[in-house]
Image (cartoon, rainbow, N blue to C red):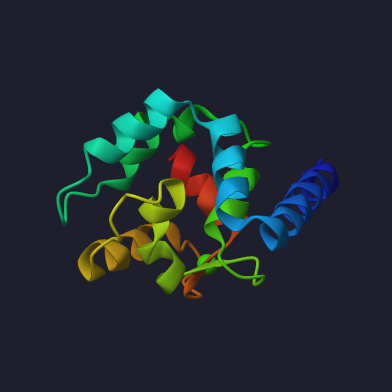
Length: 138
Ligand SMILES: [Ca+2]
């Protein structure tokens, strides 16, 4: 089972990286819109517009991520990872909302730290795909 999961993840993630090399912004939008509806996307972002209003559990529910499958979530994770590290690092967490929609704001330092603390289950300073899925589903 875990072998199957990692194969699915590897394929999805590799595909995502390939897309990025071509048309950065449009491939993000295309991938995300295949997973989140426009209404989910807009609704979740709108209620977290004010600085320091970000609540990750509420956000994941509003934006519809908490109801996505364990096959879809690694694709979302791939969009949030800005480099080829395979992990979301603190600087990337800051841009979490912006990666979902360009016009959204960056998280404040306080929000970024709070999100990192919640998401980083093993405390190594970065968020792996398993930690991301656990956070979204928590
Ligand atoms: Ca970690």
